[in-house]
Amino acid sequence: MLTRIVSSCKRVRIALGTITPEQAVAFLTQNVPMDEADARTEVVEMGELPGQKIAYQTGKLQIVQMVEDARLKQGDTFSVRKFHFYAWLNGNVPIALIRWEFLGMNDQVDKLSELK
Image (cartoon, rainbow, N blue to C red; front, side, top):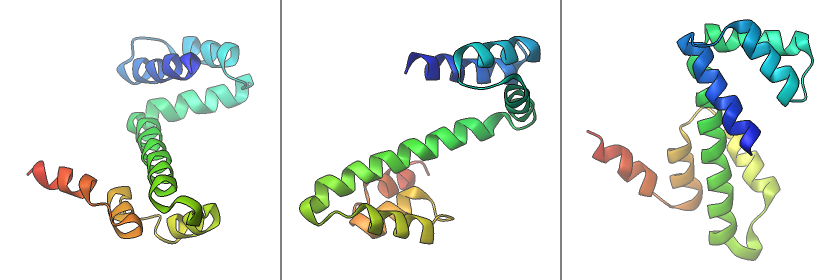
């Protein structure tokens, strides 16, 4: 977990230009199971699309939370297969809306409405 947090900080530092690409490559090859070629590719992507990695992580956390909410709400009827199928079928819809339709939980949609 600590490596992920530190890695996330490095991504931000790359985007801000506070570390060099070479330093980022060295960090990834030393702390993540990644060879130098893959580390260079990652660093280039981090520099060109700085928000992409953070957006990916945010979406991942939202999906993990939705799975847990589904397990709790559906109990013994919860099916990973059904969840997976539903999520892929609706993958281009914001997670808050998928969660609302799939689980009937609109708390995240309400939070979005409050931002107006």
